[in-house]
Image (cartoon, rainbow, N blue to C red; front, side):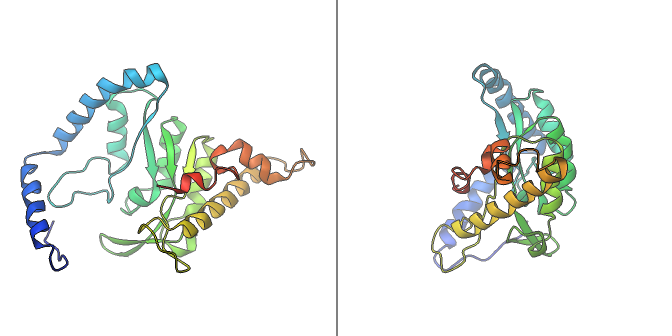
Length: 239
């Protein structure tokens, strides 16, 4: 990892940050795996007792930075993390934007592998756009606006029978909105609608929408997938 520029007046903060990095210079990938296993062995029995599912989030971006190791970065490492304590309560938050910022990570394939095992407990579904080697930016959720195929990602979730929580995760600041960078409400709302539409498309492909003509099809979708109910659609949008 190389140096980078900071705003004027931030040099002292960067100096302090470098000191912190130096303190962890001896920490290796294996150290992180051991530490994580120590933690999981202590807490997973309690999680099993009280029905609390852990869902580790991928590193963002999924590669080492500033000379510090990262381990939740690809399918191979996720397999290892889940095997540290082989319990359904040791699970994954599969963030397509974080894991997908490395083009070597096949997100639909990861959804199918870990989703079929029942180990994905939370789905963060968002898009990013590659701008160069090791470089990317956040994009609108629509597949055509970024580098990830959200159509195939949502199809994979449907195909494995995913019944957990989905959120559109991040959002740009649009329509003159002012707020926390990366969490624009309007853009996340558009993302939630887009994901709902993709989910309904795959539900309709898998069943006959005329089986219950008294019920609007979208209500059936919402009941099958409570994370996308009209009353809850905005709740997962908040960080």
